[in-house]
Length: 347
Image 1 (cartoon, helix red, strand yellow):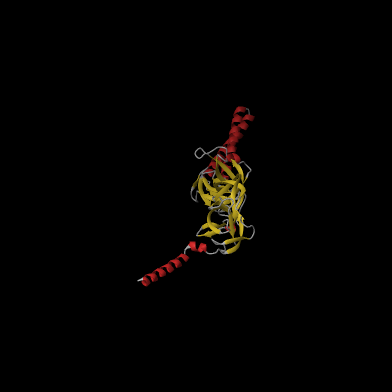
Image 2: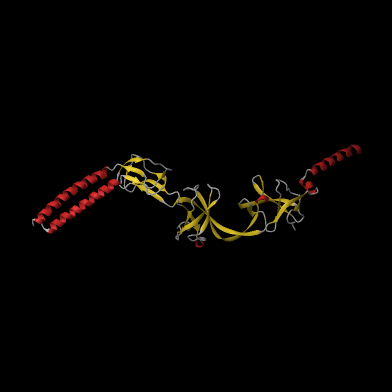
């Protein structure tokens, strides 16, 4: 009976011992592997603090094109996106009404001229008074003015571009009836751009015309410099925010309608910055290896913010005084390793 009982107990103990070797806690009990790595104590640094807003890129020079006479559009050869030059013919209107007005004005002028000549002859013969002659001469001057006005109106049959720009909107087509003041096209100057944005009443007092600001546009690589052109000192009645107009430096990749973020400098603040090479990515999450007092590495997840090619801002996960470690070789540093610092030994 005893022999039958001892054998299963010994076998069970062996299986339990084998299972314990696969537990994470058992691995930690194994002597730590020693590796050299770069280390750095995390310390807060003073950086410029920004108040960030958003806005849309617009043209500072937007022109609405309309006809000054009534008539059907006989020619409209441009479309949205076309570049036009100053003085280029954009629209040609059939000047039927303007021609009729000119014919009537010229007939009135001929009649007024004949009356003027007749009354001048009567005045020389003392058959008409000076008052009558002056009245006829005045009617003649008015008739001449109306003829000149009708001829000018006839010249408006061709609508010319007042600026170099791009057609951004087309409201009418060939065959439509144009009337004075009704917009046919809209032009924008692509070299004169600005961003309209709104800022909180808390920060508007620190923003002044002429201030330089950083403008980030997702469509281009990097940011461009803008200048505050105008601070509209009247808050919106609903949002209680103030309109700020920021003029942009010319950039070939920036066009009206693009989304932009503007950073207004509002002083300085402390933030934790660490080398970008120290950040490890796992399943889309970011982390670093920190070293405890025994020089043992431990993985810790962090939340990052602003980053560039050399450094990263840590928003959460690290504290002042934490010591991080990294090695140029991927996955060289692992949890449980003993870290021998290449530069400064952690204390």
